[in-house]
View 1 (cartoon, rainbow, N blue to C red):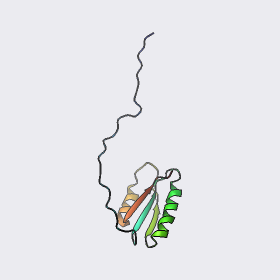
View 2 (cartoon, rainbow, N blue to C red; view 1 turned 90 degrees about the vertical axis):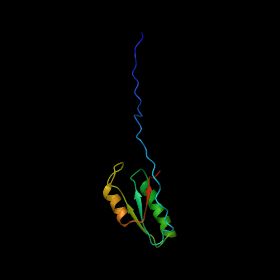
View 3 (cartoon, rainbow, N blue to C red; view 1 turned 135 degrees about the horizontal axis):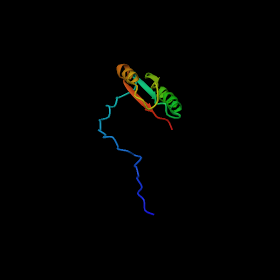
View 4 (tube, rainbow, N blue to C red; view 1 turned 30 degrees about the horizontal axis):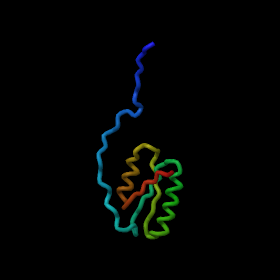
Amino acid sequence: MKSKVAVHDPRGYPPKVTGKRLAPRLESLQGKVVYLVDCLFDNSDVFIGQLGNWLGERFASADLRLIKPRQSWVDDPDMRARIEADGDAAILGVGL
């Protein structure tokens, strides 16, 4: 018995990706405002906490600020605007 089977690719169509340059590197974190962004992935809060402790020991004059988006996987323009307005750098933590 012959029959036709329709197969659908679950990957869909990949979006077009446009490369961007990385942000310029700061010469030092001393005296800078650095946002540590907990991206709400599993265990990212633990990672960000440990990273904050490590950075705090080595860059005591850096102003480390922990911040979280309102929800995972959704852009948070208010958070990005806050980081851009008064931050010198941001480190995104995605956890384990």
